[in-house]
Length: 297
Image 1 (cartoon, one colour):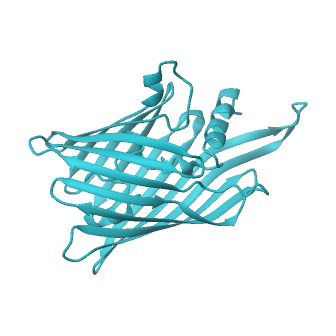
Image 2 (spheres, helix red, strand yellow):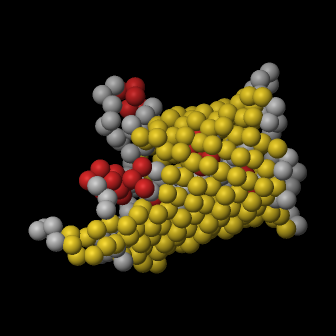
Image 3 (cartoon, helix red, strand yellow):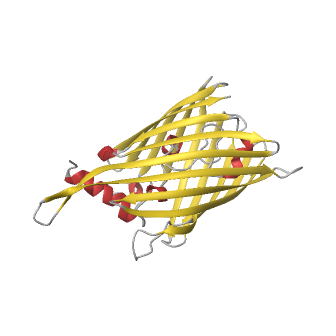
């Protein structure tokens, strides 16, 4: 049985995200935790939400698990490959919110219900010949279930990137929906967004810095995410991320802490055969942690 705190946290995620689904804050990949939700252009531990970044990828497979407060957990599996001049990815993500008791206003037990999300994404990308540009498209089949109510949609996320030795610049549209089935008559659907990302590698130091700006037109919400990846020692890399207050939480009285209330940190051990990463993320006063393993083939 979930306690009151657990239920409150669930509804905080559900209601404040404008849609009863984790995809509006898509942290089923542990890489996103360490960058506080950003970090889409970094070379190592890239989550390929920018499908155009697939042109810089290696043939590999990746598994990730994240544990949230209140017994929420997320898992993702991703495989990357190439066929002729086309790069592609297949990503499966699941978020399990747990089982809950259904009770009447008189506290009479009426059964149990569960909540979960499933997302299957196929990504395609190609380089534009004789240029530093690449383009791609992620197409997702998304399903969300809450107490036998289902939301289903097809999501499109096109992107384009420019890359040279020291700089990367990307633009993407995330989660443009074609809804198949709504939860109810309110016809509430996933909030699509626009993102511009810029990355700079420092010449004298093994550091890459990135800034992401994301705008949700329906909710008029803007997010700024800053991230860094540092080659600390040989095969060891450190990830750092900070972002504006994603869900407008009121955990802190200090205005500066509200602006930068979401902080991430990660450690990666990277080799030619794959990598292992441990990521942490501050969710108000709680800590979310994730583990990821990738294998190059």
